[in-house]
Structures are given as C-alpha cells and as structure tokens.
Image (cartoon, rainbow, N blue to C red; front, side, top):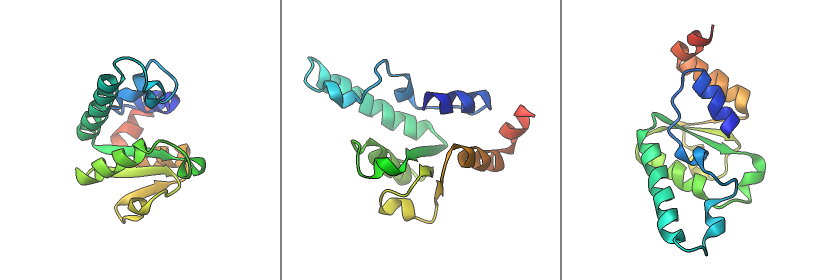
Length: 129
C-alpha cells in the first residue's frame, strides 16, 4: 500500500489514510493482549473514521484472496464511506453486497485505478506531463 500511496502523492493526490504510517507491519489487533491495547485500538479506529471523513473518495483494495480472509476493517470503512456519501472505488473484486451498488466502481488493478483517477481528475494527470 505504501508504494501506491507514494505514486499517488507524486501525482499530486492527497492521501488521508494515517494507518499507512503505522510503525508495525502486522494487523493492529495482533497485539490485543498488550497493556494499553484497548485505548490504542480505539484511537486507531477513530483515526480511520476521521481519515475517511476527510477524504473526497475512498479506495478499497480487495484482492481475490481477501474475500475469504481478513479482519473486516475494509468493510467497515467502505460502509462508513458510503454512509457519508463518499465516492468508493474497489480495486480487486467485489466482496460483499455493497460493492454491487451502482455508484461503487470496481477496478481490477492498480493500472486501472490510475487510469480512472487520471480520467476523473485530469489536473493531476496533466501535472505529470
């Protein structure tokens, strides 16, 4: 995800997802039994919700293998974005009924996402030329 963020920032996009700055590589819930975990995890959740509220659109990465595994955070984030009437783009495959809504775009891969963003935000695409 960090490589995708770097490419989008280089293209002039603003990324609001603070979870990409996490110091640990694993899921936040992996350390649920550590002292202070409840407060730390609640803060991570609050940051996620704030970041979604601050975004103009939300990109959800949902590769085929993620449909049957995962912790479900991306589903909560998608639902929250939809509740806030944010534009949602799924990169990968549809994983639940909300991905079938007509205003949710589904793109197969990173090059497809880049092409869609460049078409919808031509000023960013032009800044790279």
